[in-house]
Image (cartoon, rainbow, N blue to C red; front, top):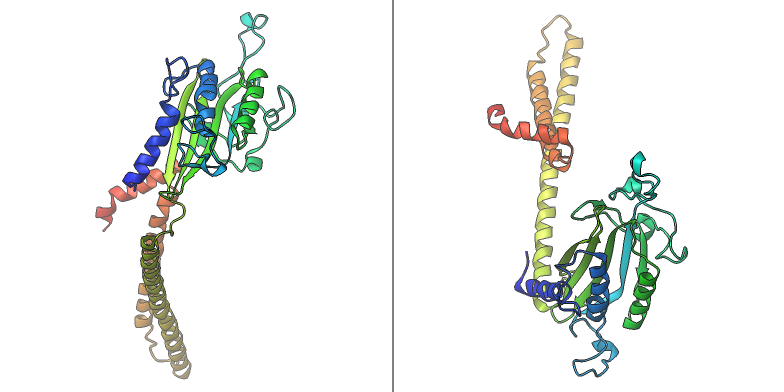
Amino acid sequence: MMSPTMYYQTKVMSDLFLDSTFKDNTSNLRGSSSVDNFWSFVEDVMLGALYWENWYNNQSTLADDRNILYENRLLGSPRIRQLRVRNDSCNVHSDFKKAITQCFDSYSPHFEEKGPFGLMNGSAWTYHTEKELRGANHWGLLSSYSGAGYYADLGITKEAATQAMTELKENLWIGRATRAVFLDFTVYNANVNLFCVIKLVFEFPATGGMIPSWSFRTVKLLRYVSVTDYLIMGCEFIFTLFILYYIVEEVLEISTVCIGFSIYRTVMVNKLLAGLLEKPDEFADFGRLGFYQTQFNNAVALAVFFAWIKFFKYISFNKTMTQLSSTLSRVWGRML
């Protein structure tokens, strides 16, 4: 659920990064389609949008006022990361092998470049695994990308970020092997107690050009700040107590039935066997006990069946399980 405040927080941040025009006033990030547009975005929009070191009258801001749009504190250092593919990721037709010596396929984890390149040292030029970066897969417009790659932390000042991006540009950090570039950063607005987690993605397909996409996730991660928040926390606590109470109650009821039946079964079996041993020639009536045991087994089987049916929703990503779940849902009425 998104409140009006969340909506406007998302809107102002997206407008700043997506709709701010480049210096030539001909394009913005939404309309970008080439690597030249990427560097125009970096130099004309990104650096100025991330680091607000001057007021509108060019007076320097204090450290506490260096916030995006003067209100949104940049948390930590923004990070730029790229994924590359190997030169041998595709095959050139024999007629063109002498003329074309390089071939870079579309992105796939199998074709991912993991060796150093360019300056050959530093995090921007050496490969880091997804585990090292504590990253995660991201679904882009063209492919699903791993959380690994080559990265550079831009720093907390505009000067440091400008220097880092200038070094990347001058040494051709983005090349033919590049398939995706990610810019990740998070801001926090204390006025409304909202975080905005931002990811800008620049995909470079094997066909050439660039396809931008983005993600602005405005969330309330610090839930208990105001008096109203603490009232909500109290209601959540009471609700949790109710849930725990009814869970315990249901477990105890089920346990009581199972324990009671087990005791009854044991006593009755012992009683019947004792009578059978005393009078082996007489009829031993196990019918009622057998009936109760059968009904107990049926009840347990039915409970297990419903448990498995409920479990299907957690494994529905498998095609076979999805078909089975769909089949069961369609014949449910006939089964009953």
